[in-house]
Length: 194
Image 1 (cartoon, rainbow, N blue to C red):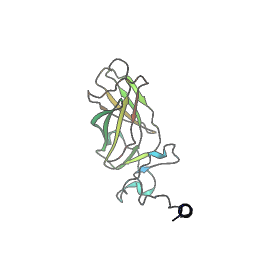
Image 2 (cartoon, one colour):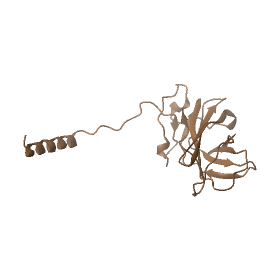
Image 3 (cartoon, one colour):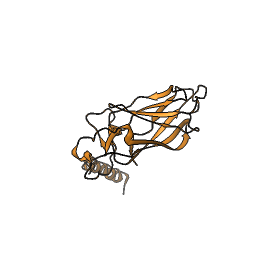
Image 4 (cartoon, one colour):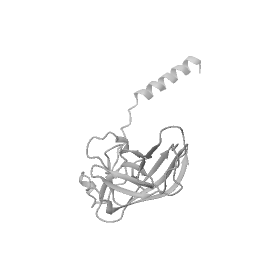
C-alpha cells in the first residue's frame, strides 16, 4: 500500500471515529446516601453509594432529621504522614436513635490542652450524608511551625446549620511538621459510608 493510500485510510478512520455517537453520561441507578437540600457549591462532595434500605427516609427525597450529638460517636483510627501532612482516619458511628443526617464536610477545629483553637477549617459545603451505620473520612494537618502545642489535643467537628458539635481526643503522636507555610487542618474527603 502506498503512502497516500495509507494516509487516506488513516484520515477515513479518524473521520469515522469523529462521527461515532457519543456515549451518554453515566448515571447512578439507585439513590445516593448523600442528600443535597438544594444547589451546592461543592457538587464534588456528592458521593454515589448503594441504595439505602427501604425504610430509610432518604428514599422520600428529603433528608432525615439532623443527628444530635448523643446519637453519634467520633473515633480516630490509623495515622500516617505524606508530603509534610499528618493524617488520621476518622470514623463517625451512629450508636443510638433513628437514621439521621450530618454535614458531609463539617467545620474542623483542633484545640490544645488549654482549650484554645490552634487551627481550624470552616465547613466547605452544605451537602448532608445519611448516617445509617458507620461513615469514614480522613483528618489532615499540615505545617505547624510554632512551639509544640500543649497536649492533649482535641478534634472538634461542627455540623451546620444545627451546630451539632462532636469532639474526641487526638492521639499523642498526631502532629504536623513545619513546611514554612500557614498551618492547615482539613478533611481530606467528605464523610461517606465505609
